[in-house]
Image (cartoon, rainbow over all chains, first blue to last red; front, side, top):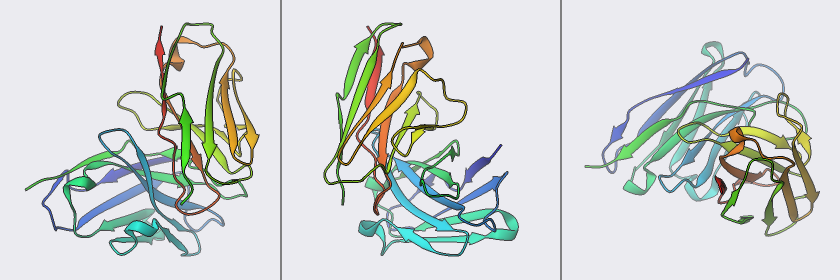
Length: 121
Length: 107
């Protein structure tokens, strides 16, 4: 069974940088094809794909947020870190860490419980 | 970006009903289409991937179909635990966005 857990601040001020850590178990980013990423859900319930990092170091970012986003991995610790710069109240959302298995059918087969991040002064 | 449009946005149904949800892509995504179920206060869970492949552990009353731009999620006989919100997701191109969701409510 694969489990993922998000950690980080619940409240950030506008213009600050958000740093979220995903710690996972039951999978490894040293396994071919595996990826770990982030999806957020606004209070209005819309889901938004943000970024994915793969076992080989390849990264994919949401184009509209690419200038503000960064995703990195620490394979030895089974951790993935997402940073989102210049936070704005519209970035208030629940942020989910997600697991992508290898293979030819991209999907998120396991999700973390999510962490609510509020942007407010 | 590829736009994903779900319909209806909500529906009311009774236990035992057959329910069909539609997802339409703004351009062809072949069969790069996933379906997720989300219950209140919980993370989404994968139901179906590659348009029609049932994720392990998902009941067989769920089925998916379609290719190109038009897709369906069908629940053959709605059960009490199926009242939830359902989302489609395309994984054909970046950003791999989701539809707006379909909320299935008790009639």
